[in-house]
Length: 132
Image (cartoon, rainbow, N blue to C red):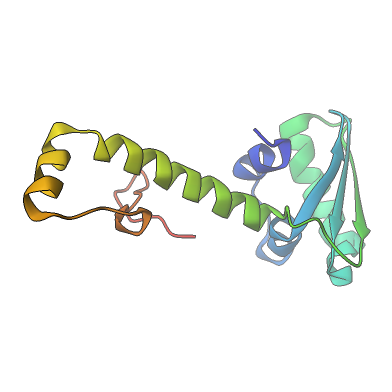
């Protein structure tokens, strides 16, 4: 599991700092120091970094130091993209399990149909469809 994705699932930020979480990439993390990069310079402002560091310290401990660097081009591993990838992988896993059941196989054979990832809906704890 990516430590940035794992940490982001547990932290709560004020709405104005959420873009820093969603649009940053984890450059390095050693347990006490985390370096994030972002292609949006406005997200490197101290107020956003400080708020995020406080939340990360709740998860990783008070020793955690956070640095956010502006980069002109990212690697494409923003938290938003990681979440989408995880969501798709979960849908693929569910599709694989569903399509192997005898009942579904019979229905698909009877009607000459197929199911795709677009036919799979994931639900949260409240039985509400999850979306990305």
